[in-house]
Image 1 (spheres, rainbow, N blue to C red):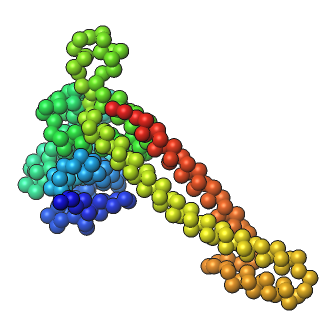
Image 2 (cartoon, helix red, strand yellow; image 1 turned 30 degrees about the horizontal axis):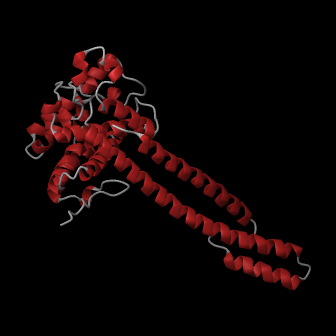
Image 3 (cartoon, rainbow, N blue to C red; image 1 turned 120 degrees about the vertical axis):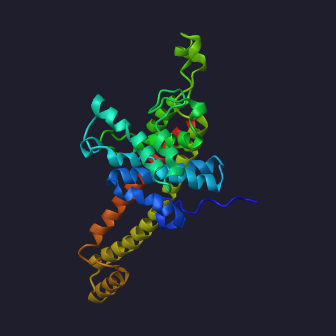
Length: 312
C-alpha cells in the first residue's frame, strides 16, 4: 500500500494549524524567537520534512524529525540580540557565544517534559560526520539521523537566505558548497596522508542527494506557477491588443458612427480601472512583466540543468 504523504507541508510554508494538537505546544516555542530565526526554523522544518519523505523514513519519524527541526534553534532565545541580529560577520568571541545555542537549546528541551523528545535537533544540528562540528565534536556513528538531516536543511537555508551575517548566493553555489562537505576529502589532498583516505566529509551524502531532488522538485513547481501566471498575462495582452486595434481603426475612421462603434467595442472589453487614457500604458506594463517572467523561467530551467550535473 502506498504511504500517504505528510499533509502538513505546503509549497509556501508549514502551517502549525495543520499539525496534530499535541505538537502545537512544541511549536509555540517559536513565538518567542525573533522574526528572522522563527522564519529560518520554519524553512528548515519545511526542508527537513521533504528530505524525510524523499528518504522514505515513514510518517511517524517524519513528524518527529520535522518537529525537531522546528526547535533546532530554540537555544537562540538565550543569545544576546547584539550577537544574534548583528549586521556583518561575527568576531571569534561572538561566534563562540553563538555556538552555545546548541547546548542551551538542548538543556531547555531536556528541562521541559513536552520538549524533551525533540532535544536531539537542538544538540546535533551543527555536528559533522568527520567530528569537526560542535558542540561535542562527535562523529558519524554518534550523530542520530535526525541530526544529520537537519544539518543539511539548516546549512541550505542559511546560505540561500539573506542572513544578517551571510551574503546571498544562488542555489547552485549552495549545493556546490554542500557537495564539498558531503564528500570525503579530495583525492589530491588525501594522497598526502593515508589517514585522509578514510576521513569522511561533514554531511551525509545520501541526505544531500535527497536535497538535490527536493530543490529540483520545488524549482519545477515554481516554474509551473510562473508559467500559469504568464498564461494569464498573455490573455490580458491579447485582449488589450484587440482593444489597441480597435483604437487604431477608430482613429482612422472618418465617420462618426464608426468611431462610436469602435469606442463602444473598446469600452466593452475594458476591465477594472482601464480606460481610453491608460490602456496603452497597461498593455506596455503587461508586456514588460511577461518578458521578465520569461527570463525568470529560462533562468530556473538553467538552474535545474546545473543542479542535475552535480554529483556526490
